[in-house]
Length: 134
Length: 134
DNA sequence: AAAAGTAGTGCAACTCATTTGCAAAGTTTA
DNA sequence: TAAACTTTGCAAATGAGTTGCACTACTTTT
Image 1 (cartoon, rainbow over the protein chains, first blue to last red):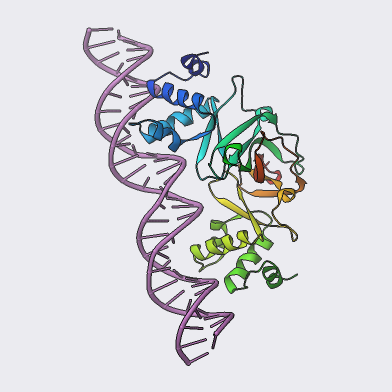
Image 2 (cartoon, each protein chain N blue to C red):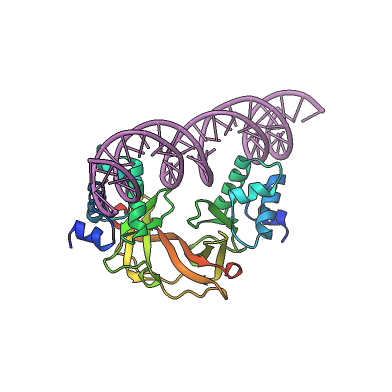
């Protein structure tokens, strides 16, 4: 599935900006912040990228992670993702290089909640040092 | 152990402000933000409270939680807490009332990390609706 | 094809939590 | 007590995120 198809698949009209942002997210080995993406383009407007990311998120093309770095990071969802509970996974944030990785292979286990608490989503971030920083 | 002893125990000099902030945290049933605490006192300075919280956190009297609300929340550590891996626990953030609870009874399980990744701490937040908001 | 409507973009400005600089007040140490 | 250090209060800076608005581009209707 190419970039345009991916957007179409999530009901997002493929504008030039959106294709560029999607491409950037595809090529990045880790989650990216609004600022990261802005810096990748010479002449890009922050609010356009911001709105692009919001659109992507709303349509479940990407998910956001609050990794404690002060910047929200975004990463592509797997193709069939509906951002449901069973799509949830852990993230690892490196304190040194500030990179955030999706640990997509491990879903979060069932967690006991107090009575009548209802789980909808989760933001699970592990902090430490990544392999390349050790 | 009274308030002053608790501070002393963590090597924090017991000033008036610190005792007040500690008391506020003790009495709160949930994690509190800088703003929450500021509002509890008529005539309190934000940066003093801010620095107080930072001191508390550095000395492991409290831990901070990024619950995605846009405000960092703080909650008392259990007495023997060293903020080590085995002290880690989940948090629950209610999307409606914005309260954040420590689910202290459940420690996080062992999570498989990529090779050579080193875990130091974690920020685990479950989002949903709490019992009082349903 | 022209007009009207809708969606996307770029710029500037604003919000708001957090953080810092600095001087005054308080505390401890020599 | 004087000097050195710590804490506090005020004001201002920082920086991510967000919004208003005008302009452009695209779509749909006539």
